[in-house]
Image (cartoon, rainbow, N blue to C red):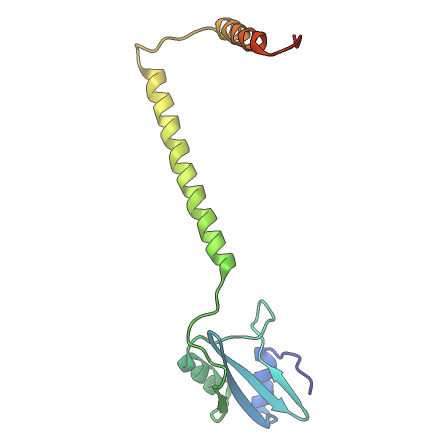
Length: 152
């Protein structure tokens, strides 16, 4: 049997024309899907954006959807239904990254505020670029002198 998906508009047209032979609600991990048979083929309902098989989390939502489309009788296969939602590790990783980014942003803003307070403090000692470069050159020369061999 063919298992290509159908969209909402096609399902509504088929239901309106009375062309659907059977509607089956199939339980799976995290919810319920709809499979309709017309002619010799069965087709699961696809989600609008993803084009993947549409999954209804609540049976009440699914029943309302089918009634709105014009389908009031259907069979239910709950043999593979599991109430817990399917795991979404990609969402967990995304949330973790979002929390890490927010923490880094908080830390960065705090560091900027510390720097601004220090810059505004009249007791802050400022040194010129030349003095900073001289101190750095002296530090580098001291470190190089500790290296074994002739690396200058």
